[in-house]
Image 1 (cartoon, rainbow, N blue to C red):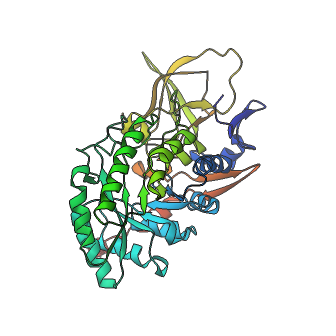
Image 2: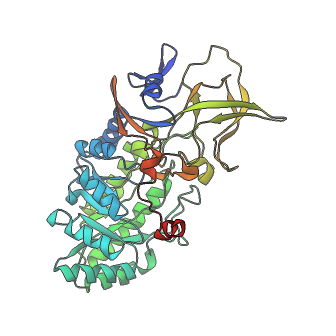
Image 3: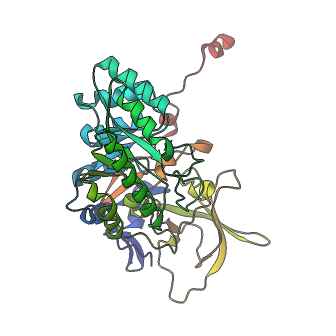
Length: 430
């Protein structure tokens, strides 16, 4: 069993909602990403319901999965978007998300990206999350050149250890993100004096894949103290952006309860009489997707058995990059009492790091069998590449007993369409 109601076995075959995964593999080939509309809706509503009665903007962190259909789905539910590039900003608007619900984060915004945000929809975006004094100065110049004011929340680094993987923690003093909690007052004073800047809020984000809520509570306590102090200093702080980072279950973790998370916000933030923004990404899409793949070979080595798949680290880089765990299950349900044996599950790429699992207990499978790599809705297609000249895998969105290809697999000609040969090649031949 997968433990995910939208990916479950029926008549001995794994289904995505009401669709047999064999049917998807036959229609689009493998590897392919498969997303459940029902899962997207359930996850969003679990968070929206927890924050009912609070002035709250749920700005989906689209870096987790930027497929236009996924964005459109969340927009239809009322979500905004948290973007970290000009490209993401344009995708969000292309998917129909209003600029007034878009928050622009990221440590390295360019002048051109700032311009896009300020001009978006003629009214501009909801908020820029500013990460440094240098960025603040540049945003002031760009906004002033347009004769507008940029709504700004300054990202504060609270020096709270999120106790997650070192590559995805963002709220400690040594991380590149935000401005030190101890320097907040002077940076807000700087912002208040700059032309083209309108201070509207405070932003924090301490990391990703948090399953323990304690670091959030530590952060919210500090944040409430800071907002109180900033208001006393004359700053009109009317929104707090609490970031994202809520984790999901990949293996045996216990995912945080949105109701308990919201209770912390009600306890520490709501008494400020302030609007709230959230930036969930993985929480909304992580367990809503899987990577459908096929076993190409079963290789018996001297000391190990390898399952060699047709998907690789270019399709799902998290295990290679973060040593991340993903559950992997056969699409055809194993027989009752099937004996499990340890195998290494690997891809076809010429890298030792192209490994999804080592020593993983699996039921018997043979070449040609389909497998599903679960919890692949976040940071899979979004981080995919064409390494080894492998085309990007298609993306499929399921809705009940229907499915649609929402990004097709490109051909090699399409992959090379942006390339040109320099003129001197033809000159040499002449």
